[in-house]
Structures are given as structure tokens and as C-alpha cells.
Figure 1 (tube, helix red, strand yellow):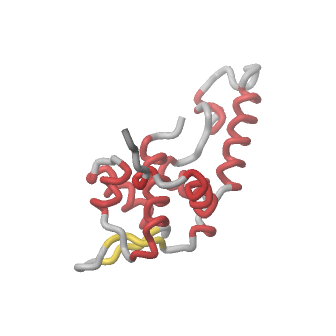
Figure 2: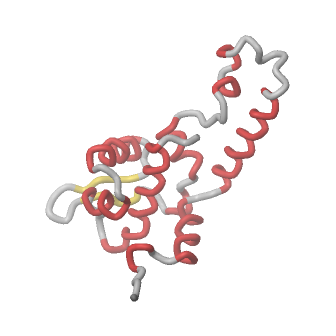
Length: 146
């Protein structure tokens, strides 16, 4: 299970990418659109900035912008910055945590599932998510009629 930090971080990157052409994106705008606490989002963006995914600009027209092209931001790298190593169960990442690892019939299965999950994340970029979002439409622009 991915933490909220990783899920929110990917959503924040996607939000910045969607609004990047308008200039730097304000933290409060991202927080409002994504329904994320401003304080929590700030911590996430600090991590993403330190890893080189986003840059911040100060001043009247300040905010966050992508530091790389969306096609250069692989999701596995972003998730790893926010989450650490990605493993379905702890023993896959560190076999020493479980004394049953050497004879456990499910250890190999969890390792295969973890590898598949990591491969999917490695094969996807922020640009892929932007394309998916374009196909699905923007929820904040949807109109409902009674």
C-alpha cells in the first residue's frame, strides 16, 4: 500500500504539470484543487524540490514549477523519493525481518508482485498521466445540470 505522501505527491506533480504553462503554481491552489492540507503538501513539495522534480520561485509571481519535462519524470523515481523502497511486504525489501523467509512459500510470490508493481511505475512518466487526464477530462471543470 502506498502512503498518502506518495499518492499526494504524484497528484501535486500532476497538478503543477497541468498548470505549468500559466506560470508558477501557488501551493494554496494545488492544496485546494487536490484537497490536501497545505502544511502536508508543503512537506511533500520540499522533498520533491530536494530531489530535483520541482523548483520554487519567490515573489509576487512565485510558486512551484516543474524542474524537468513531464516525460522525464518517471513515477517510480518520484514515489521512491516520497516513499522509500517500494515493496508489497517488508520481507521482500529486507529478508532479515522475518525468520521464515528462507522457507516461506509466499516470499517469492510477494517478490514477483513487488517487481511487477515497480516495473509498471518505472514504465510510466508524468507525461503519461497528463495524457490519461486529458482523455478523462478535468474534474474541476465538469459542469452538472439538474
